[in-house]
Image (cartoon, rainbow, N blue to C red; front, side):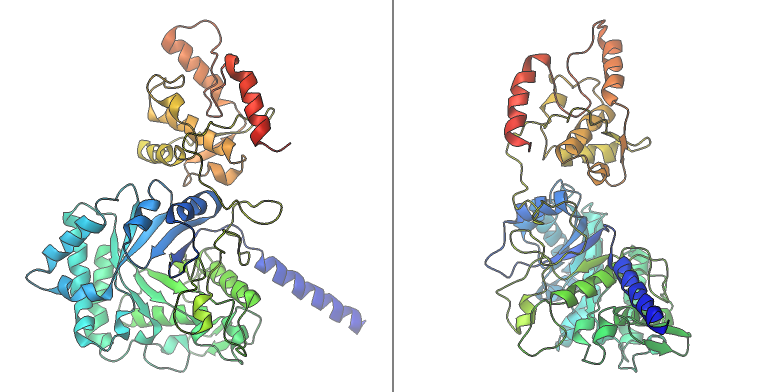
Length: 501
């Protein structure tokens, strides 16, 4: 009986772990570094992320125009960075604002709003610098940048800066005992946190359990079963180092009266390779850490002191970077190979081929023909009632990068009715049909819905009312295709060449 009970407990524990590890597709951001000689072009990266993953945010370590423009007309938002060395000139009382406006005009204005830049990062981990002038320049530079963005009309871009966890005073690892370092807690962070509160920007930190673990705390760092760390002040038991680090930051902020300011995770990840003999590094460890982190930041689970919250988060990193200096591990934080196949599965891929590898060449041909709707499919994508014209126009701009939109252009067979709602219905459904009719291909930031009612019938009625036609409309404009009777045979030949049997 005892053996049977023990066996049942083992099976139950294994089932719980499998269920816990099975992540739903969740939106998250990634750091996109390019210190490598084997990476695909930025446009290919942007197209792949937009079409084949649930990644909806990308953080850049500079303001490279080739990277910023690559994400134009995609649903992915960008965080763009300034170099640390720029901050002193931006902080200057006399000329800093003019310098900031010039930087915004040169580096952001040409690309926004086509590219959805939502964050501007003033340097990276500035407080690691031994240069006191650079540290003192940080907050004034952030203020000038925020003012410059307002004056240049880029009000959707928020300003923040990523911090390393060394901003916290040394402590015993109990989250409720955390506080900012002496000096920082009185002179730097109170006005900086007030800036974040005033501007609605997040306080960004880089929590890295990888840089804090040892052999004894490996399970604690990787979200694996462990005894945990008990916090006697809050009566909470922490079984995750990441949770403890996040709650330590929150505690330090709350001590200063700023527990209401949002926290964003600028970097966090785990390498898949390291120097020989290093314990706790590999594909399984990287997957366990990032899966656990995703459950905290993206599912709404939150942390013990911040339950039911989501956190804007950027996994480190998108690709391995074989040109980075330093230890082997620094080169191997990536989650995707250069051919877009996953190094390990985090549930972020929307679809993959039978071999498990996503299509490495997602860019459509310059003038692709829209795929015909599979016969008997019975599913269409339509705009949700209440979706704004602005959102629908954004959907049109995005989807037209992947499907043929000539039918809704002036003179096209599906131009009428000439309104955003009708054109969006055509384009959104064309995109949905072309990508395999998955529900997520009709999401469009929650402005699309799948229906079993053929929208072309409603459109046909609209056309008859507008044109006075009494015979059936010959062109199906439900967004699946432009299916005139004179072209059916050529479409069938086209389909037989491109679609699997």
